[in-house]
Image (cartoon, rainbow, N blue to C red):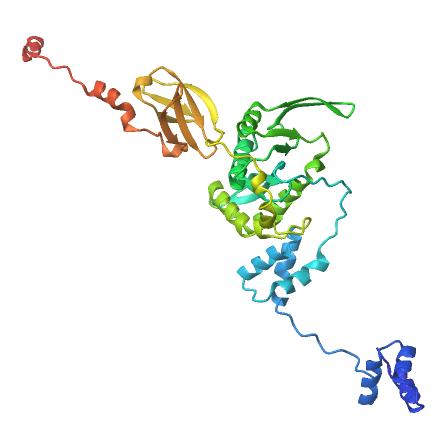
Length: 397
């Protein structure tokens, strides 16, 4: 800022014929500042005019709250702002967020690239949400193709071998093909035992359910070395991407099924269309180079249901998870197998034959009964023996 004393020096030098650029250099200001001051005939005013307001100003507190809660993605914040009435553009939001984004230095690691169709990386994450208005923590399994970075994820209520197989099977169906290798962490849902001696794996035993699943699709399993989770860093970063993008946009849903419907819509509309930060290419376009390299899927999928044994009770019912379900009355007293699906379906098998189908019900909904299952029981119960009237006459005497 030029003060009155500087202006007087400037005016005297200008009268002596000193060039404006030389005066500016001596005072440490721009030549334009000198020219405007001489034209005005006085030093610049003490205060600059107030800057023009921004359309984002009324929403900056909203943006700051999002940043404080851990949402640093400008695109997500922009979409949320539109929901609360913001009519400005995305660029303005991005310019506001960018200088505030914390820069966290990452640890150096070696990046391994895989050929098309060779490897899929799988990992679990969890996130707090609201389901049907109630707070909950959901678990989600992310499955990512190592070459194209196309991925699928499945939202459920727990992490176990059956849910892992279900999530990966859904991913295979999403890709319309299976990879030759599935890379996972040393999680118990897939790896039963992983013994390492002198930095080398001496024994690796996979969970039987997961191993049977891989065999069904012709894939092989591979586990990261202990304490080397970065071996599957691609999918770990994608777990974070799902948290910051999908769950930031969808913090609540009506049910797990609703969440999975929203997830697949988001994958099509957002994740598949994005330009990947590492490859620099659109994910869906890069997947075109990978899809024909995947293994052909078998005609029948893998059964990911939980199998348990039950004895049919005297009233032709079986008990499953606290509730009761009917089976044909011809099975009274027999041992049958029940298959409980990840989706809540229930099948009852006598040998290899499915003899009853139900949907799991909560206790408040009561038992699930198919009337045809109990036809013979009702017929026997309602059957009244016919007797001649003389029998009743003898009793009354």
